[in-house]
View (cartoon, rainbow, N blue to C red):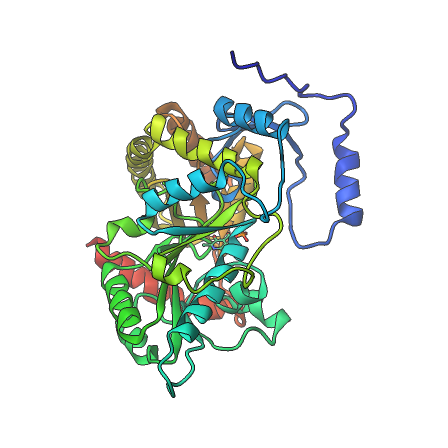
Length: 445
Ligand SMILES: Cc1ncc(COP(=O)(O)O)c(C=O)c1O
């Protein structure tokens, strides 16, 4: 019989919020601006702060906590494996890597898996695979294939390779020089893609739906042309599904809405139910480019995280969560559409499944702050786009509560017209947004 999760006290006498905040302020590297709240536990799609106040979490640890908090099946597996072996090293087999790879191969339609600790490392591995694959298959005397194509407004991670193919200048410029050979294609612009694609390209990397960028889906026409050009030029088509994959759209992978598959797909975020685990999944012929010793990791794919990931995928299937995602998404989108006429600053509702965005003509941060005060966690990206990434197992009543709380936040929050700064990233992104906004609106008509 499953043991009950012990209750942690919501108001632990040993826990002092002010002291925790002071320590963070004094000793953490200042890379995050955080509200002054400390979450101490979660249950379902709720988080609780140290005073016991409940928050409905529609951000889910940025698309990670897809089963919410303390899902009993996950807790059981993590407990069991923590008491057996947390880590073994990749010099030995563990009981879960093979079965997890089999499941991911089945879900993705691609044959082989390499496990990592994070999304950015999955991207690094995929980029290295592309270089190794194209080098191995290069015709004698051919020009070296070293260029990476990515999309304007993309986000692929923070390590050097991943940040080199990440578009916003604010993420790249402080760290230059970066990995050479990266070039950005205008979002969903087939003509620009054709102009930039030639025999020197080793990979094109696409987020099937841009997440950090503000929930922008890649068009079918663009995907199909990228597929054709990659095949024609012997380059690798890499789908970055770290945020939009593994069920979030109501499909196992977001690219499954297209007829053509990528050669490699990267995953991470929800894979191990909140424990750090990522992977790249590659077709057989691509994976064959990586031979013993040329790539590796100490932590990636340990027994504890792989057992948790197997359980996560099992729960998604057993609890029919893909169907739940689609049904809840319809309710959410219908509710958001009802709000639109009341708040004329809502420019657009975008997304699919449980990756949704509200594009505003005003600043989004005051709304996210007001929502937090009222016990709702959402996120604002690119200064004016609210992003919703709730767990896959939310219920209709959670959707109703979310809509109610969001409505109040939209009503009560101070409204500040969103004025893009004159220079830098905002201007760079504004050009992208104008074009992408027009494309998404045209596609919706
Ligand atoms: C599409 C995409 N790729 C890559 C990453 C990087 O993943 P990680 O933060 O786990 O390194 C992210 C993170 O937000 C992402 O959304």
